[in-house]
Length: 513
Image (cartoon, rainbow, N blue to C red; front, side):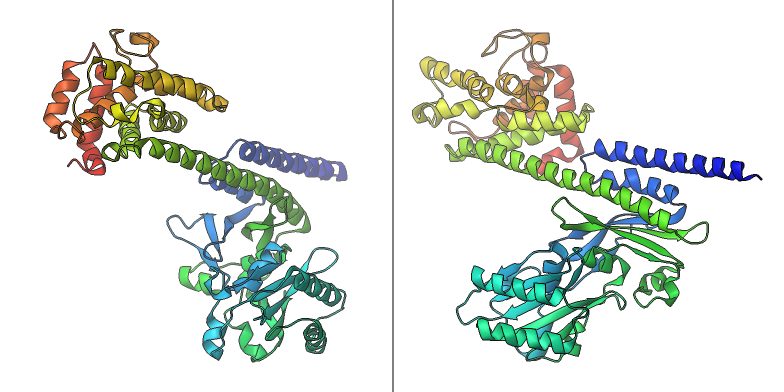
């Protein structure tokens, strides 16, 4: 084969890889669901790098561990890498100073050292040590100031100390001891420790620890490849795992798998905070190359942005829905007997919608509409809203205004495009197919289909729940009223779907079984 042919083949291979990289970027940019995102890209990553399998680990800040959210070849098995580095490891992972009053109450606090020594940690200050290139070298930890809390001025003093240590060629025991003595001359604290990241050994260990055996401070801090990459933010390319002390072989021993080589790169967000790592195992064509490392680093950048966006989307969505539930509860709270009505209507409506094959995005719009369907009751007088007994004609006319008020209030909210029909859907839950409903007098096709679901769900909940003037009806009585209204007030397809939902266990969820 000629040199020209070799160049052509190399160019074709490059184009193929670049095309796959663009495809990965296209896929992740369109996906905001963190549950679906990993599977979309990791199989592509495995094929892109000609590997046997790949794993996406995300940093779980509640448990201080790397948790695999996608692992090829390990379907149904949870893979967790416990970092167990306590607050010092958290500060290093996040590249941030941590200043605590009650350290032992912090979720990341590792109490093993206190348990071994009998010491009790209260106030704690941790500052990461990072070089000019951003690489984390270790951290400084000070315990128990007599003032109860380390001040912002204390933080600045320790940060200056961290900078001095970072400028050294090596943070050895003598240098660490000198720096702790220097800090003690300026600050009040009980104990000081300087930790160092040992990339060669794959662990975080104490170079100098006052009041404790430094050797014991390294217990249970073995990180493994994924943990070390997450901690340092530096990628690792290991051609022979069996001869590398950083490799944790326990997983291979448990599964019978044989890991020959590993390529592992960090995932960090725009603020340089640790998100997790991507790990690719066993190159099919021998060993991973520097080109593979560059390629996976590019993929990691794309995936990190997508994960960060998914987190932001999830947090925003959760905040939005919790606010809606609070608004709904504020209306229900005006009358203790009907408390929880809006949430139960939403629950019933979603059950009906699932029977009818609604998509997830449609279920979301329906749930928002259901939670807010009675919000107009905020403008109804308590004397009418809480009346014990049936309403007279004037009182009923006043109560009917709540549907129009729901529309007027919700119309003023700047909903996103997805939820633009919520005001109409929510306010139409008293419309009837025969046009005799309110507030608009819509009929049949004029009524949003989601509102037809709300109508059935709202009536069913009202019939089966206790009210001021009567006890809740039996299921058979409620069904009879719904069946009698099919074609005039209720859509027959919706009533049938309600029955199907309740027959499949919906009654248990509502407490009606």
